[in-house]
Length: 169
Image (cartoon, rainbow, N blue to C red; front, side):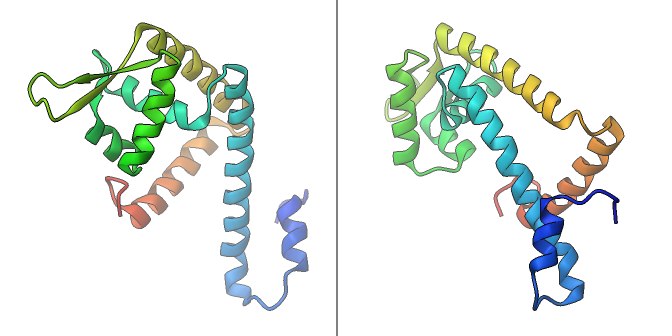
């Protein structure tokens, strides 16, 4: 055990009635949840400075990853974001009001709606993702690259087991 104790060590010292062989997984679960919350809280604070919410960043990211012309069908967004159609519609409408996306009827299938980044939306996405990368590097930079690689490998193995290679299980 490391010489310096963290908050989770204190919590674990107070927990009784857990089998000794389950204590390691319980502590790891607490640490994963705590680290994820702290990372998300810091990213939300940074996003607020840009006037963008976490859900907006997710949608901007899906469109930006699509590459030029930065366009996806509503169905593709639904699959990418794993939301209901109503959830995607609400998010698209919010970004459309900001002028960051536009909706067009698919000329190849008039029943389909295509969602595209506008020039302003692409500029905002580039700006926000640059800040996000800097924040992640700053926060996770306390670990060496080797430690980050090892943690990535371990978490990849866990996620593959839980949700499969496509992240949908």
